[in-house]
Amino acid sequence: MKASEFLSGFLKVVESGLRHLVRKRMTLRYPEFLVVPAPDELFGFKPGEARDTNGLRGRHLLDLDRCTGCRLCEITCNGISGAITMVKVEGQFPRNKRGIFPSIDYGRCVFCGLCVDACIFDALFMTDREELAEYDRAALLYGPEEISKPPKELPVKIRAKRAELILDERRGAHHVQRKN
Image 1 (tube, rainbow, N blue to C red):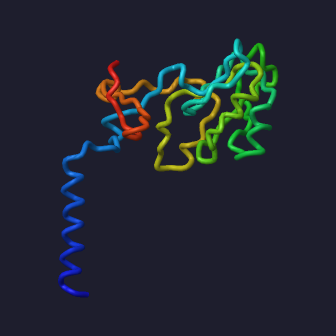
Image 2 (image 1 turned 45 degrees about the vertical axis):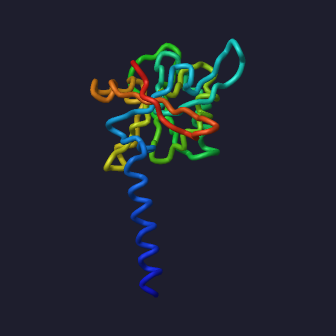
Image 3 (image 1 turned 135 degrees about the vertical axis):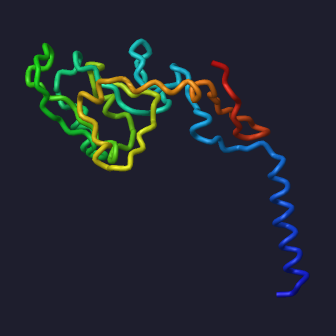
């Protein structure tokens, strides 16, 4: 390799680095910023319009009082990832005589949302929370009691900085800080 080729390559690398020093960062750092959709941007079913709405598919939320234990969510999931299994829960439930409810293994879940579509009793929903990282795989197995509790509220410092993704023809994708 000639010294002139090496110097030319080196100068191109330095020029590229300096150019990116003055540009606004495209990637948002996770704990500092959180891209949160509006409630109408979440995944779900709109009965009045008889159609599904696409959107963020986060952690599930189960309404124990509406669940009948029909197993439709489990049957639907078995064809895709097999993340849902039915487990017995002790207690009296007026709509669920057998006392069986879904348990979700988030290590296997692909967040397709078909289990929500299959639930004809509107007992299973998807929330906007996707923070499910764990160090132990066993901690990703959520039982009916854990699924029925709403996700924890975000700390105030994280909630204060929300960003929104903007798609622009000329500039491409970029983020804008959303006012709460």
